[in-house]
Amino acid sequence: MFFNRMKILVVSKTPTHPTFAGNCRFILNQVELIKSLGHEVYFLFIETRGLSRKYANMQKEIDAMKNYWGNHLLVFRQKKYQMLNIISLIQLRKLFHHGYTKCDDYYTWGLSAYVRKLNDIHHFECCIINYYILSKLFVDVHFPLEGITTHDYFGFKNILIGAKRSWLATTPDEEGKALQRCPHIFALNSEEAAYFKKLSPNSIVYNVYSTYNYRPSPMTRNHVLLFMGAGGEFNLHGIQWFLKEIFPSIIKRFPDVTFKIAGTVCKLLSDVKDSHVELVGFVEDEANFYKLGDVSVNPTYEGTGLKIKTFESIAYDKVTMVHPHSLIGIFNPDKAPIFSSLNAADWVSYLEKVWGDEKTIKNIKEMNFNYIEEMNAFVISEYKRFFDN
Image 1 (cartoon, rainbow, N blue to C red):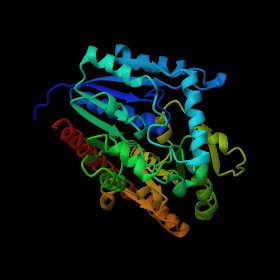
Image 2 (image 1 turned 60 degrees about the horizontal axis):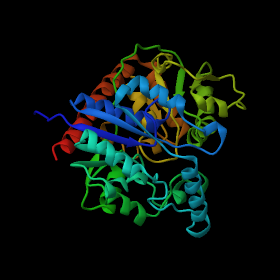
Image 3 (image 1 turned 120 degrees about the vertical axis):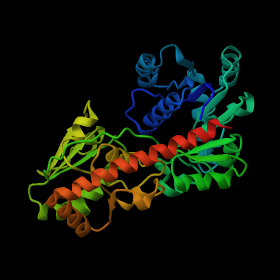
Image 4 (image 1 turned 90 degrees about the horizontal axis):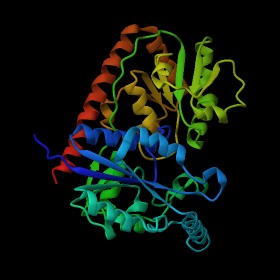
């Protein structure tokens, strides 16, 4: 099928580079997929200037993005006084609106006028915004094809994960107001796709998960468990759960086992004093880290959105073991090559099978390849469906 080449504008307060955070990585994956379909993509980054010297600008991120985007990078710089107004408004929401954000509270003043001028120059045929907080752009500026990358859902999120961690928490009516401005909605898992369809019945919802490059790796046949993650509370709590509830039973059965942990989450684990745990810290090359063992774990049991660590493990050709939370909303769960359980004895039994039989690992690797191929094909078909509109 032939697709007409489109000039596309992606708008985001989240940078594409450096790609340490999950949302950065998703945006970059999405952009590269769209480019692979033959479209021309421009990236408009909204530089959010903080009030402290530490966050006075994001020049490091902008320089990194320039290396990737070249003259297709556009930057709108939010002034400090604008950020002060937003912060003041959010504080008022905490006092008089139970902390719930209204859909336009974080919208950047002057952005619509800036995008209108850009559009007069470039004549974009498509615009994709990131997060519901930018939906006002589609009220002020119109494009032939408009979509929103949701990243997550935020209605009553404070109730789900706790008030202190509920960034952008809002009410379903405000989230619905934002989504109903967007004729096309990209959801990152199947449960959220159903939720968004209820909030915005007239919008077309696409379940785009993410795409991954499958990277085969040789078997090590060692007793090593791998985890890589950023320094967020969800990753920390997941590791703490694993170390308390699951890992002692694994040590008892496999006394030579090592749990290698990489990423900035290591900074939060300095109090872990276990000879079976190795804090690798930041790694430059993820692929080299994933070559250190056959088994990768994702013990995270909180949060919503895309289960990046689970898919990443499969894409790096690992035997993947997770907390059941990581199965929620994933692509084709009945065929997913993923072990999940809350029971330590189940983890030990599965590891006995994996570490005791080379054929088991080979079979899982074959399933990994097939799963990533099928998911990528499905995601590509969803984007093609979007561009057919």
